Length: 181
Ligand SMILES: NC(=O)c1ccc[n+]([C@@H]2O[C@H](COP(=O)([O-])OP(=O)(O)OC[C@H]3O[C@@H](n4cnc5c(N)ncnc54)[C@H](OP(=O)(O)O)[C@@H]3O)[C@@H](O)[C@H]2O)c1
Image (cartoon, rainbow, N blue to C red):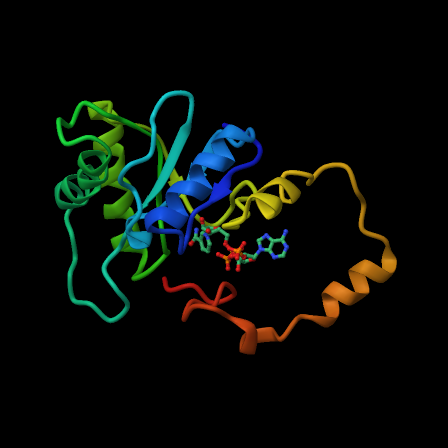
């Protein structure tokens, strides 16, 4: 798996196409997408590593998909890449840890079925990942590739720690210290 990916959350339409095209020309070979981002269509397939994310039911939903239903829903991502269904995904992750252990086990079993059928090569969860900086302009896409040739000093670390807002800074309802059973 490539060590750096291009994040496409929020990039759609012409802006998204231009940004992904530029990122690929400039050397990114992993494009991170998700069913939730509604932008899986229209990406050129050759020489790229496609990682997408299966979308669990929303918070509070009573839906409890079986492994077979998870597999069938996951397959829609392949059809969005290529209507003939002959495409494959390099990797598919479970997007969120909700709702509970039984749900997560069924999601995992569903993706394992997909992997067995051969149209998903690797499966995983989206809690730990390579850097996938998202940017829409070419100058930022270039700047964000320079990840490995600088070091943060003590003051940089203090400045970063100073940005921590604790739970007030959380961007989703999930508390990573208290995941559902
Ligand atoms: N697994 C998950 O559940 C999950 C969750 C969140 C995100 N993601 C993935 O991670 C990617 C990144 O997410 P994120 O939350 O870190 O970022 P983000 O909020 O999606 O976007 C990054 C922001 O930083 C700006 N930016 C980018 N490069 C910059 C630079 N060099 N200088 C100044 N500003 C810059 C971008 O502006 P412009 O677009 O205007 O350039 C954009 O507004 C997403 O696109 C998605 O692929 C995955």
